[in-house]
Structures are given as C-alpha cells and as structure tokens.
Image 1 (cartoon, one colour):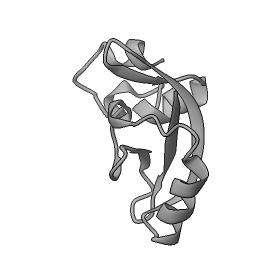
Image 2: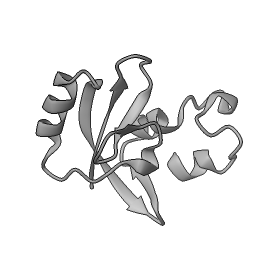
Image 3: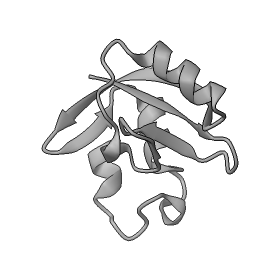
Image 4: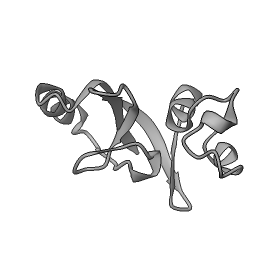
Length: 98
C-alpha cells in the first residue's frame, strides 16, 4: 500500500490524502498506487498542501499504519506528551500506530 502525506498549507498540520481531499486522520488515507507524482503535482500546484511525499503503509483491521516509525509518529503526534497527540483520550491509539 502506498499512501500520500504532506502538510496543510495554512496550519502546517500533517495531512493524509483520502482520494478526494486531505485529512488529519491517517486512517482516512487511501492507497494511491502509482499515482503519487501526479497527485502531488496537482495538489501542490493548487496550493492545497506542501512538502507532500509518498510513503509505504499497510491496512490491518481497518486501520492504516505507515511502515516507517517516522511516519507513524507524524500520524499521531508527539510521543513524549501523549496529551498533545491527535487522540489524547484514546490510550490505545499510540500502541496501534507506533
């Protein structure tokens, strides 16, 4: 599975390509196959996202998990302050992503 990530142009937040737009939740990420370069060109050209790139991922039990630890940390938020993660009220979120 190939997924696309980048940063929101206005806020800088980590975003994930859903197939139709961008989401803050990695579980909304769509498999882009070999279309990454075309999507990046279009979305960066329209100024919807910046610094976009393709990463490997896997979908298990309905959850999308980036293959590399760096991307898993980007998907959830800081590991040293769980209260600042994207899902602070879900103690199991870190275990599922990291």
